[in-house]
Length: 200
Image (cartoon, rainbow, N blue to C red; front, top):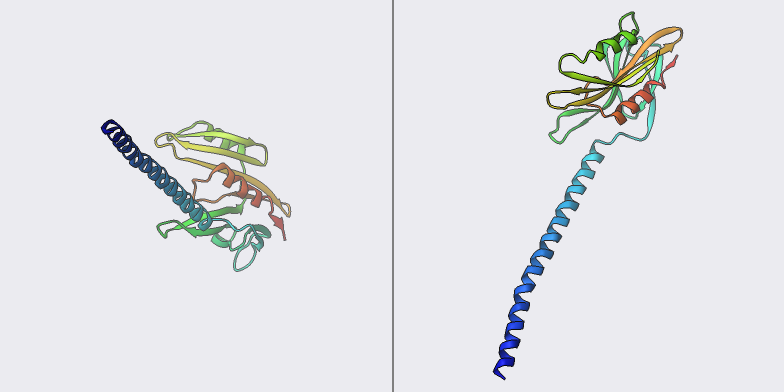
């Protein structure tokens, strides 16, 4: 009888010892799962906060003192920032987690000249990989140069392009937004916007 009682007590004790461990593991897994879900929710919220509208609008670049005889299709809400009458930036801004302005989408359009239209020379200069920046060419033609830049000390990566556009017989240059740090996907979306430039 005593042996049965002792045996039952031992089994009960082992069961009790094992139970908290299982609960702790389960609780730990639940907590980890909840934290991962919350982190995922935060990431989704942040992504939504910085999301680019799916709708677009056509913006005329020859109004309010701007002197570019063209229109461009950009995400809804984009605004024009004029550097000069024939050199401007069109973009959509948002705010980062700290409340600071961040460029979500942008392109630059400027009058072409003998320097900025010489894509072959630009490619030669970039190929030198000077000043601690390495360049990799993604696309190269007479009208387009697209490349990836990597800062060797720190690994900062950005994607850029130069697209020559004919507007009414004149050559213009369209580029990515000037904030930098663009992914290839972002730069290609901006390139697609540049291809919507039409003479007015």
